[in-house]
Amino acid sequence: MVEENSCVAVYDNHLQAEEAVRRLLAKGFDAGKLSIVGKGYQREEHPIGFYNTGDRMKFWGAQGAFWGGLWGMLLGAAFFWVPGLGTVVIAGPLVSVLVTALEGAAVVGGLSALGAALYSIGIPRDSIVRYETAIKSDHYLLIVHGDQGEVERAHDVLAGGDARDVTIHLS
Image (cartoon, rainbow, N blue to C red; front, side, top):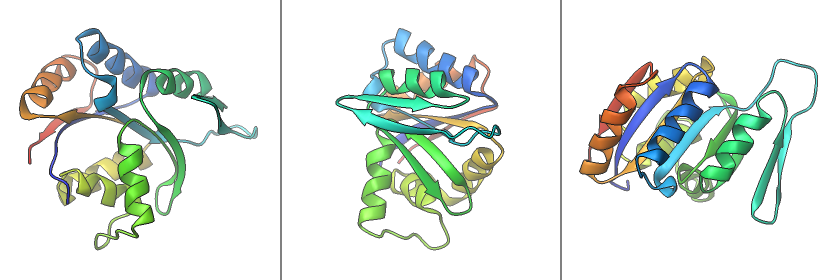
């Protein structure tokens, strides 16, 4: 398990999550240390998807502007189908952690691929269950990766906003 510190905030909707990312960036946080996770489906009968054109990710569907905007701010993006969760969209460094877990067939007893990725960055099992439940309920996770000072500062910024829950996980 890779030991990392993180601050995880749960948001009710994509507008709140995007605003939180913008607040962090305005406070000088490194976009390369921010990850966001949310459901990647829509309730309309129109197809959705994404594709990569060079260094730009394109997404269409009900929340295309949201994900497209985040992909412009954060490094890395992916669209996965995770058993038990459904389609999940991830932006930020958590993408590479999830891909590494999938490529290495890292299965952590009873956890989904996303849960295994969260576990590998130091998030405890009881919190993983809470975060997977939030995603299943159409909420969004914003994860700030960094040293203890960075995640504590992120907690201070995020706790003053619209987050449903803001938790620090120290290694």
